Each structure stands twice: as structure tokens, then as C-alpha cells.
Image 1 (cartoon, one colour):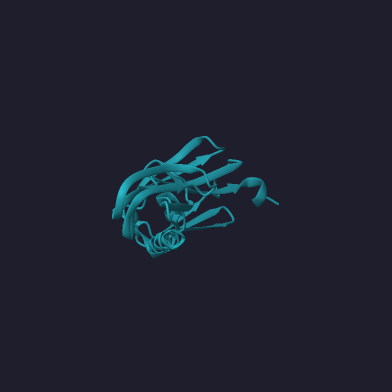
Image 2 (spheres, one colour; image 1 turned 60 degrees about the vertical axis):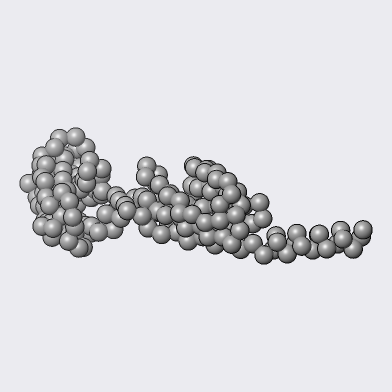
Length: 192
């Protein structure tokens, strides 16, 4: 009886330790979509949990009796940051991360700006797709210019505000209605 019980325990231990699993995360069809590839040598119930950078659960998916599958992860509407993916089975847990950057955060890195006296010099560091808006306003409200520019023709732009009497002049770049970046000239910072 003891010998049979020992063999059953050892067989269960071999089965438990013999189960291997692996996950890979690949880019999906857009910036916010990813594909989780789950591979295992045994069928088991699986729980996939997505956690935000603060460790809070934002999504959970449960499936039964699977040994491998592709699962879509959608981070659209989420802010930039490192997201944690947890794949839980009754015998092991696998972890991976996604370093997610929103489209706007990626675009911020593609624009450089410099303020020289009363001038704002903007440069697109590479040729960009899509249409951008440059809005210039004075004293946080009065729009004095609203230009649409294609990303491919953005290049370098110089805005001279020597004749401006405004206390603050802002030059902002927008993409699809979202602010990418703003540069401000403050009169009190220029005048001696």
C-alpha cells in the first residue's frame, strides 16, 4: 500500500514538473495591439491577466483545457508605460511585459524645438505621415495662427514674434486633435 501510494505521488510529481509553458508577445496590427502566443506541452486551464504600470488589473481572460493559442492584447485608451502580462495555470505562472507607447508619446520624440530670443524654431526629426496642425496663441487664448501641414513637408519652421506685445505666446503642434507639444515665449523672460 505504501509503495503504491509512493509511486502515485511520484508520477503526479513527474507530470506536474513535466509541464512546460512559454509565452511570447509580438506587435499587432497597430501601435496599441499585441499578440500573446501561449505554448504548452499539456492542456490546462489558463487565466491571462493584464496589469497596468501601477499593478492594477485592467483585463482578464479565462479559457479551459488549452495547450496553446494566440490571444490579442489591446492597450488602446491606456497611457504609456510598462504593462505586465500574467499567464496563470494550475501548475505554473508565466510573466512578461509590454513597454507601450501611445502614438502621441512617440510623436513627441520626433519634434525638436528651440526658443531663441523671440523666435521659436521647430524641426521634425524625420519625415512623418499624416496631417499636423500648428496653432499659435497669445496670452493663453487669442489664436493668431492655425496652420495645417502634412508631416512629409514639415521640415524646419521658424516663427518670429518680435512684433508681438503678448505676455505669453504659445506654439503648439496637434495630431488628430491631440496636443503633441507646446513651446512658450514669455515676454518677462526676454525683456531686460
